[in-house]
Amino acid sequence: MCEIAEVDARTAPDDVLARFHAIEVACHEELQPGEPLRGVEEVIAFYRYQPATHTSCHWLGDCGSASLYVHGSTAAFVHLVVAPAKRRRGLASALLGRVLERARQLDVRALRGSYATASGAGFAAHVGALAEDQVVRSILDLPSADLPEPRIPEGFPAHHLARARPRRAPRRVRGSASGDGRRSRPGGNGDPEQVRRERTGIRGIALAPRP
Ligand SMILES: CC(C)(COP(=O)(O)OP(=O)(O)OC[C@H]1O[C@@H](n2cnc3c(N)ncnc32)[C@H](O)[C@@H]1OP(=O)(O)O)[C@@H](O)C(=O)NCCC(=O)NCCS
Image (spheres, rainbow, N blue to C red):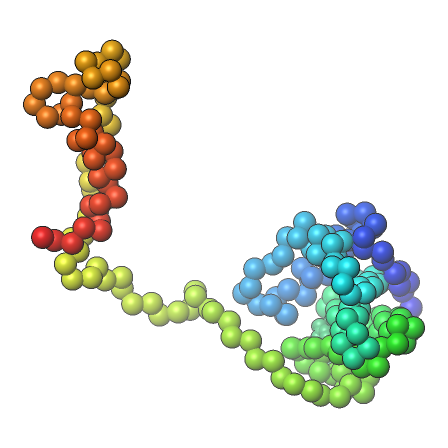
């Protein structure tokens, strides 16, 4: 049987906590298909900075891990996972043995875990776990969604930015008559108010309804 080590996540170095991430990566497609994978920094931070409001204990074996979170004697949770390549060798059973031993020391009377796979169901049956609630997760699957064509609401002109000719930015002229650094020539273009409107006007094009 492989060695199992308890990990003090608050003081363990990054490379030890990164092993939890490696196990997550190995099981990701099976446990969260299509969902984003947590990065190694996030996993390290998750284990290292658990809230002090509950007791957290962690164990690592050869490509398998177990965590125990004790919020109270009937609010204790186990998280157990073994990489596919290392399964059916008794690793999860050994990890659970360590979890149960600690849970008893902490006066835990009910320990809860969850599974979403056939292996989890088989293991739960093997250890004599009682079935409780079923959690249904609703997952947004955008890549396979049949989305309608975008439609511009009635009364709003379409303005294609790709085809729009770039506007020239108003030039600043040093030492202008107005003294504010803006171009000031007769005929309207030098009007500071108009220059300000030109600068901000692009935001109004797509939103303004037709008169
Ligand atoms: C569930 C899991 C942790 C089991 O890890 P493991 O190291 O393979 O478990 P063990 O070798 O200790 O298996 C002990 C017993 O559980 C049962 N079991 C384990 N995997 C099983 C499977 N795929 N199908 C049916 N029964 C299974 C068997 O009775 C097995 O004994 P056996 O190998 O002598 O037949 C692992 O498959 C896993 O990580 N699954 C995905 C995560 C998960 O569901 N975690 C929730 C655990 S409650």
